Length: 410
Image 1 (cartoon, rainbow, N blue to C red):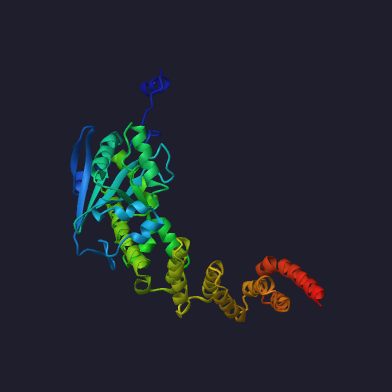
Image 2 (cartoon, one colour):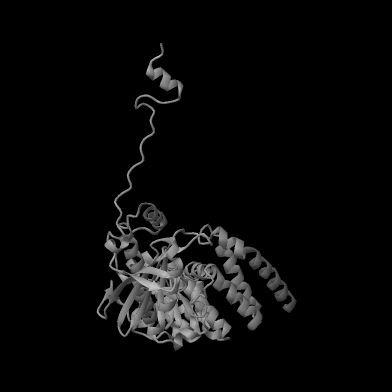
């Protein structure tokens, strides 16, 4: 007679503990954001959103640099947006987002938005946190109210990422974005112009170290980890890891205020504020791009007079200076620079001198001499492949043309 166990097996009932599925792990104890970050739920017409506020007083320094502007923004306004010059410091908003993805798009939302604003000489930072995606509309409403007094926006890579992302989120909720009418200064664009030659890494974190002299504590978290950390928080309700994200966001915004102050000082008085020759030349390039030619030429000369300017950049700066003189039709100054560069075996200077004597002076003999000297330099083993590709055909063509002119003149 079949046993009870056999009858249960026939009915599909498993006997014993073998092959039973592993029981689900117990979720960690919930730690709401209110226990982790100092803040409070802010009521809005669309429900509550969580706010955290921090004040940085006048004597706070981010590394070596304070937050309040110590120089006018005239030069930055001329370069970026002339509306900036008409804004009081209290009308600037410094903004950064932490998002559910790093690529943007309609599926990405900003779960933490930090915004800083000056009140006198105190820098007030407010962070708007989305405890749950259902709070997004309330979060966006609260941010818009915060930005009402502001006329200018300062971000770091915000023109490409933060502002388009937030504009999309407002649109998806049928709300008007408060960002579209603000003058926008993206510090990343200016940082690339100022430190491209000296600093391979122009990320905000590296600029904090190299320019501001500030190093973050171990509380900081890398940006690439932040989206996953937020998703883990949504699944388990443990907000403790959010403390590092709040710190990361706060430091980004405070660093922007300090960086703007440093940039303003650097551009207002570069000969005093700039420590590195490469930075001095970079400011000269910026002035040249803005049409401030006399200032650019002066900075190029000061940069070349410094002992810390690398040789490659010395010759490139000298070349830029010569073309400034050439465009201004100051050929005496241009020729003087080219002759110095020719002593340094710079091919372009020989080419420019050949052009000058051929077309300006009609001295075909001197033009041919400069051409022959350039060709001799290109034929030496020290000449680079790039130089030969750039100049060899042109110089050979010029030599033939000059030889014909001299023959006709004879």
